[in-house]
Amino acid sequence: MNNTVHKAYEILNLIGDSKERGLSLTEICTLMKMPKSSVFDLVKSLYDLNLLSLNPYNERKYILGIATFELGQKFTSEKRLVSTCEQYLVPIADELNQTAFIAMLNGENIVYIYKYQSENATLASCKVGSSHLAYTTALGKSLLSYIDEEQLELILNKYTFDEGNMNSIHSRDELLKQIEECRKVGYALDLQENEITRVCYGAPIFNAQEKPIAAISISDLKRSEVNYESFGRIIRDCALKISRELGYPNKQYWNNK
Image (cartoon, rainbow, N blue to C red; front, side, top):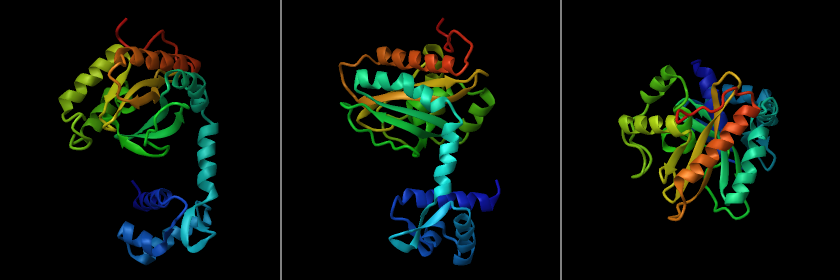
């Protein structure tokens, strides 16, 4: 990877995480552990490209520029993914009083690209744009279950299984068992692995080339009366409807036929 591009990406992420407050050049240097001259050149280039702008209330601090929004809009508008998922996912979230998510795989992580909270759902802390290790989420596990074996092996080799909480997966073998189960039933579970109080049900979305391109999930507080298998099948069947809308040609993608 080109180091300059990588550093520029890191700066954008740092400033994005600072929200409306922004970061000064000195603060960026401190966080990046880079000399001021190097950071200045990168920030100036990002500013000239409108990827950064100055905070109108504090012109010593940089915030994300309009070009970052435009790029995000182009990504979303060029994809039928979000709108199609929303069409099928929102009614389920409303009916079950759940919070719904769409996420995509980014290396060994998943990144949340959409969130919908039904009126009576409890608040979930995951925010659009945030990421988690894929193996700690139902979204991520459902995607890991259907990517090709070579890509899966590369990702598995990056995991040390020392993150998460006491409910999280702590070994490669344990993850592989859950992947095998997801391939059989078509959905994955997050039983208080990402957030200690919450459970989540995730299933993959496929395109016309039969490749997993994203995943959807519904999430709520852990409740003793909830039937995990029933909710899993609901999100799985929703994912299949979305996939078919996007051109997926098969009757189903899981192995339990």
